[in-house]
Length: 417
Image (cartoon, rainbow, N blue to C red; front, side):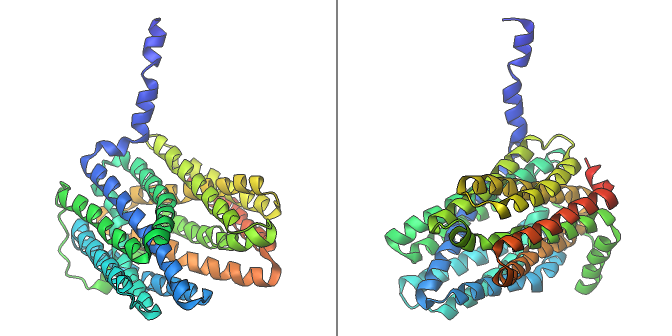
């Protein structure tokens, strides 16, 4: 064996270690595996809950109502959740919120086991779960800086997305099998049990205590301070605005996939499943790619690449009537979406001072989750009048305008490392 061969041979192992660099941190390993189990349970409940509410009512309108009621607390409480995340231990805050989610899951399971569950039960529990999520999300997003070193933060964010996309694929599949074999109550029970994994992970972490500043200001004053920082910081404001537009005109368009599968591709529910899976696969590939590149300084460039590729893929998708090619374009949509979202998150986390992190990331969370229902509403209303292809093309046009505007007026984004 030559000297050059002996030098180059270990490189694949080094590359693999870099791809999963965040996992070398004890706290992040606990978080990754505990949260993955919990998220699979969450997707099980979400899927089974949709089946159950439709079985009880026979009304698609109830599906929209449950989604709206479950998302309403994010609009009402997320910003206040960010204030609290900057005032108390984020780990303790998440133990409380995750425990409340566990209790709600077991309540729904008990109602289903005893066969007394009614639609209003599900609506009330969905609202309460949304309240828990509204306070949990800002702490969860900001928590990454307490789990890994600064140099591994981008890698950790990418692995979080990998975890999410794996759970998105596995959770609904397991839910369908469990629901068919044993009924919805066991889906809710397994979700409740899954929260034990993340709660235990949080309790076993060795977190260095963060000295919280003495808070003599009111909650509203703290909230205004966070908003003032967002609006005075051009990079963060630009990234948050971009996230909102991508959620509305990019991901919002994907709510049309069931109609697309039947009306445009002349398929059925299986076709819809393939379309959804293709987008998820693209997101998973993107997340793993970002994990691989986490130690390299490409965040701004990758964000820009994603911003241009997403509208191109959507525009091509709008013209396609052949399923295999449609799947390829949706892989591209999922890939570019994750490039934009993950790099936006990483660039913001790098710029935000620790004492404002929870509040600023609560604005990001609010815009991200709050924009999706608006996108769904827009896509459905516009498609009803003008058809699905024209709606997707309009979304692609808006996103292309965003990409071009960011290139011309926001060159600072692509220069971010």
